[in-house]
Image (cartoon, rainbow, N blue to C red; front, top):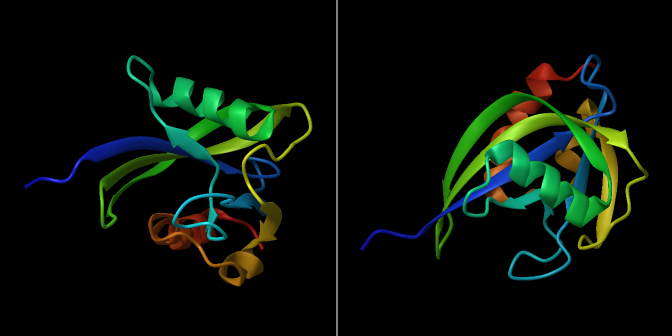
Length: 136
């Protein structure tokens, strides 16, 4: 039997899309993976584009408006109960101050600090790509 596919989006929020010296990561505050680290984002609702979903999710989770840049990658990942289809984009904060609504913690990570948090498996698969595009 085929697993249900869940389409999601993730924002790799950086300090500056031109420099990419630091990225923003959050620790889940709920569910089976509580305490694991991820890039903020969430489910794409019916009728939404990936970019529309990302703008909505980041507003709901962080209370900021973002500028969405280029797509980094699409991650396909099998979790035990579902298949994840995750579109990941470079972003930066365009307006507002980040406020954690759902996450239990957050950090700005430099390239050298990317391995300092326990990433969710799907997010971890993106780290090497991100590392290659960040400046020291």
